[in-house]
Length: 370
Image 1 (cartoon, rainbow, N blue to C red):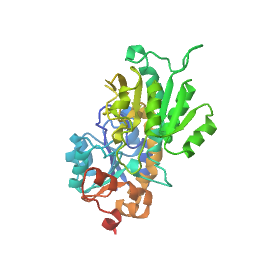
Image 2 (cartoon, rainbow, N blue to C red):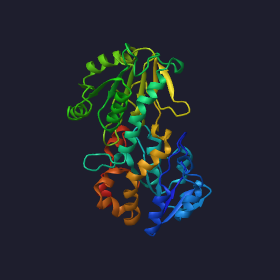
Image 3 (cartoon, helix red, strand yellow):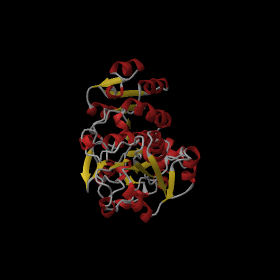
Image 4 (cartoon, rainbow, N blue to C red):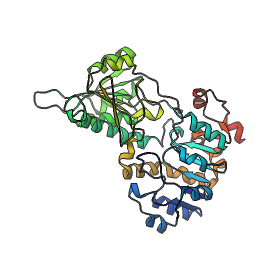
């Protein structure tokens, strides 16, 4: 198989879909790898390293897409890449289609196979989302601590407090991978941390490891009460299957929050938790609504591309190998986790949540591949 690793074109995205070591393994397996010039530079990998591993370096995305059948990316295709896609391609990357109707329609029209990292499921877990969730979660309190500074527009509260002065109140919404990571770091910074979640088992896990962290079971009224007291709110709510994040923070709730408080909406890839949330970039990361600073960067781990690329490819590479060694059809037939990752296949939406969001026709993948 010919595997293509394009340079990411999404704003402020410096991660890359495969490392030189990954390329070396694919070459050993008998495949060809084509990588776009400078694709790995932002993550600290030079073209020479890819060449030494056996890859072919090409000067344009068009050449890469023309040659390759398996396209391994990090983020979803951007409008400038749409025309490069065709039905011979299997696309393997983060898609997060819930807020992206145009891209969904393009993928259907192109009749390719699109497999989303975020909907690959194994043993009830999301193995390809987990490493990025952990990084985003660990980033969130440090980002918020910076934004609380008066010079950033925040309320001027030091997250750790000081002798005789209370620490900042940090509310973590959700207790999954990102939520746990955010809780650990916020607690380590000395914040007064509360975690709210819909079910108790994960809250109990947090209590065992971090007994001073407060925990609450979710209700709309409890969330509203906690929001009013919070200096920092970190949203880590995730709905499995690629569905849109529920808008748990209404405009009215937002207006009741402290002026100069900070909302870090990790869930913005799936639409965000607040009615006020909209995607931002690392170059222009913050906007203010109702006096609340919103940090809604859609690729938070991209701020640390070397760490993020290594963590991501550690998780994705076994699946890349399966797709390359077996071919797309056999790989998804023989691996239920990969099958669950398929969002679009040969002109049909195969993810029921995405079909419902856009009122588009849904087809069961098992019917299409039998």
